[in-house]
Image (cartoon, rainbow, N blue to C red):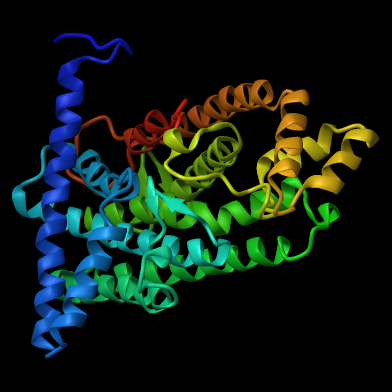
Length: 372
C-alpha cells in the first residue's frame, strides 16, 4: 500500500473510512426509526422536523470514538468478523452512547456559554433554538431508551443495558456537579490534582470509556466472574481498573489541547481558563509555581478577559507545560500498558465470554499523541 507523509498506509486509512461509513449508515437507519416513532405518536410535522435537525446537528459530527468502540470491542471479544445483524446491534448501542454524549454536550455548552463545538456554532446559539436546547438535550437521552426497547427487549442482557446507562448517566451528572460548583468562585485554593482526578473519574471515565466496553462485554456474554487457569477473574472490575486511568489520560489530553490547541485543530474555542475550570493545566501550574507566579494565576485565572487569559497562557509556557505534558503522556502510556499486560487470556480462541487485552490496546492506540 502507498504510504502517506505521516507513515500510515493508504490501506489502513481506507479500512478506517470503510468502518466509519458502515457505522454512520446505521445512524441513518435509527434516526429514521426515531422520526417514524414521532409520527406514530401523532406529533406535529414541525416537531418532527425540529427533532430531525436536532439529531442531525448534534449526534453524528464528532470523532465517534465512543460509539465505534462498542463495535470494535464486540469484534475483539468475539475474535472474528461480525455478522450483519451482530454489527447492526453493536452499532445501535454505539449510537446510543453517541446520543448520550450529544445530550451532555448540548447541555454543557449552555452551562459554559461555549461558542463553537465540532467546528460549528453550538446548538443553543442557533437562531430560534436558545433555551429550547434544554429540552432538546432531554430528547437525545430519551431516544436511547426507545432504541433499547425496540432492538434489545428480548435479549437476556436487556436489564444490564438499562442499568449501565442509568448508572453511567447519574455518575456523569455527579461529576459535572462537582466540576461546576468548583468553578463557581474564583478561588484557586479549592483546586488540586486530587480533585481534578475525582472530577475526571465521574465526569469522563465512566461514560467515555467504561460504558462502551461494558456494553460490548454484556453483548458478548461476559459473566460477572469466571475461572481461568485456576484464577478467579472479575472482568468488569478488571476492565474498570484499566479504563479509569485511560479516561484520566484522555481528559488530561483534552485539558492540554484546550490550552495548546488551535480552534481549527480541536474544533472549538478553548474556554477552560476564562471559565475557571479545575483543569490539569492550572493544577499542574499551581503545584510548581513560585509565590510570584502563583500571584499571577490568582490575579488572572477565571476572568472573562482575553488579556488575562493570554497572561495565564504565557505563564503556562514559562512553566514549561508543553514539555511537562510530553513527559506525562509517556509515563501514562507506560503505566496503562503495564495494567493491560496483566489481563489473563485463554490459550485457545473463544467466541466471547472472556476479557481480551486488545480491547484496551485499541483504545490506547487511538489516544496516544492525539492532537484533536
